[in-house]
Each structure stands twice: as structure tokens, then as C-alpha cells.
Length: 135
Image (cartoon, rainbow, N blue to C red; front, side, top):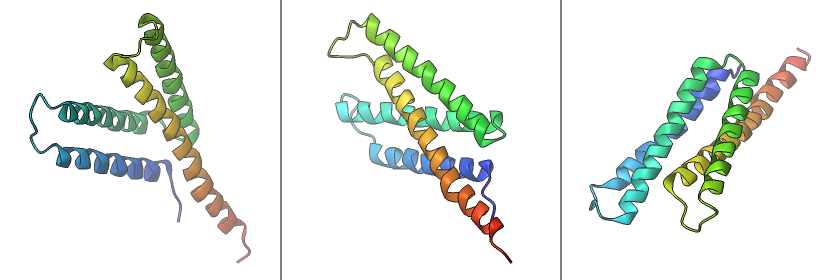
């Protein structure tokens, strides 16, 4: 069985959708002043942004190599934005939401790159081995 880039994207969309559904399920219409609810809403917004990134990636990338290049550039962009915000905030203890957002996006990209590599090693190496076996 061949595992393509589209198989990977479908898998990642499914996992991200499950995360979003879990967060939504946990919201249960809490009090607007509840800090836990505010944090959950922020987490939900970030997860939805990650899903949007995966959707955009599926439109732009035609190979795992393309996907890695796009993800690495996105990682670099977010690391640079994060560093710029940190310099502007002068390393204060209480960072603003932009600081946390760029940190989360950079971490997501790093994790996503690792998942691409794992997918390639798991499935593509297995397929190469199966192809190389004598009939």
C-alpha cells in the first residue's frame, strides 16, 4: 500500500480536527470572566490556525520535500517574529499574546517537520523494503 503526501495530510487534518473537537467539547459555555475559559478559547484559536496551515500546505506542496521547505520557512518566520517581539517586550516576565502565539506556531512547525520525517521513515522505508523483496 502506497502512503502519499495526501495520505499524510488526511491523517494530520483528522488529528487536528479531533483536537479541536475535544477543546470545543470542554468549553461547555463557561463564564466569560473565567481565565480557564479564556485560555481554552485561545488554544482553540491556535488549533484552528494550525488546521488552516495544514490546509494551505496541502494546496501548495506536491511532495514531502516541498512540504518540508514550506514548513521550515514558516518555522524561521515565526522564530524571527518571536525574537522580535521578545526584544520589543524587553524580556518581561508577563509576555503578551503575540509572544505566545509566535512561540506556539514555531513549536507546531517544528513538531510538524518531525511528524513528516517520522511518516517518511515509517511508511516510505517500509514500501522500499517491500519493493526490494524478491517475489
